[in-house]
Length: 254
Image (cartoon, rainbow, N blue to C red; front, side, top):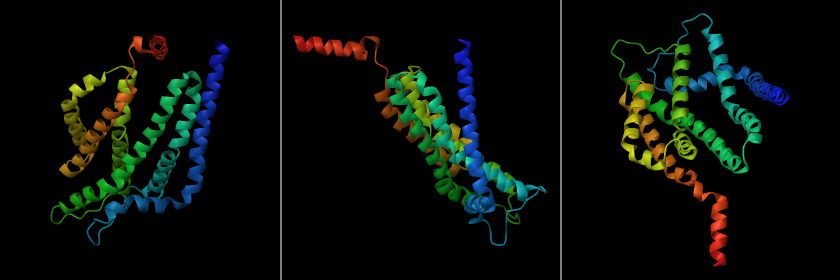
């Protein structure tokens, strides 16, 4: 028992090191373009800032450290498929064949949905939200955002929208694992819709536009996951593949 356990630990260590190595390789390749990457991230805000205003750096080291911090986060973001592959390669030998056939598509779908959530935040939510926030600034107030605080703000929203877009996967996993039946989820749909708007209010700035732009996608993605969860419902014990095969062969013999 001890030897297999140690071998699993060694394999886990190797896969973690491979994931870290991928992040570092990407960082070394992108570090030279750190300022350009930050300018791209700040684009949605800069387009809506009043003429003559600009972003500022309050801390002494912010102009140097903040772009590199963003670049490191971008490298982790780009490495997600490779990191998930390492996790998949580690757990796959312990899964049954039918479990591997179902888990792998869910991993791919969850990755694509996370990327879709981040892209939705950058290309749809940010222009509308920053246009609204800068336009509502009181008279005499100069809009000049600190670059470090802006980075923390947008990274929080990226994470919020990326996780929110995982709602279909979460719904499917709840049904597939048998934790919650599909019928129960359907009966509690009104509470899910209310919860989506509560999450939108908590995770986004206090304006109706950004809250709606998060809440409505959560609701629609829930409906999407609820629809496809019918294909992942666990069969009753008497409807296992072996019993179905036996039943079909018996009926054909009659």
